[in-house]
Length: 256
Image 1 (spheres, rainbow, N blue to C red):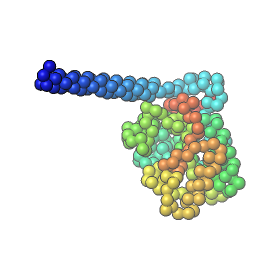
Image 2 (cartoon, one colour):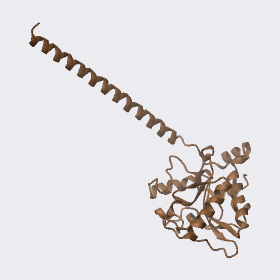
Image 3 (tube, rainbow, N blue to C red):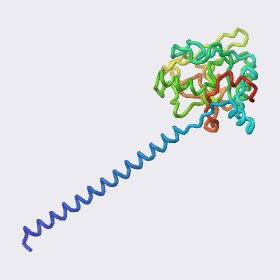
Image 4 (cartoon, one colour):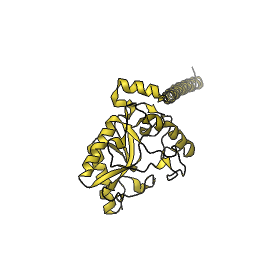
């Protein structure tokens, strides 16, 4: 075999190996991409199959089998609490009324409701109480939020449901028990600026103390803060609760 034949044979082997490598590489990429797509579809399918309770009788049956699933009207436990249910008026970040007119009730599941009553008792010793802006939120309202805003930085994606839909989240602030006036906080409700973050700096000392008092008291009784919204607290393990799309009127009937 002369040198030219040897060289040609050598180059042919190199090209063959190179092509073989490319095929293997393409196969790996194809398998990896297929896996990612499969996982994405599995996640999407999981979201699509979100369990939604829309009938009062279904909810009644659930509560009969597990009393912890009950929805408790909060003033039944905390009569001194103030309500300023923002989504029952246009005084909210959407500028639209999203709950039925003259909505005067709000709810949490039994465990977080009882814990919130302990928060109120603790605060009462300091001459304070709570003002509630929102707690249970029917799923249809979350869908409406999404239609208006469509940004997960500010509203929950309805494909997942939210703590509010499950009756495990509450938006609130502190008030003076004697005067009924709100304590100063870093921002108003539903302010989506960085000043609403729990870690926000350059906040007035008095406002910081009030924010921290709310946080430490809520955490003391089991609630979890949302780092980007000083007013929002949730009960742990919310995924154990089904998403509800029951009206406030339906919850007002005796089903707990």
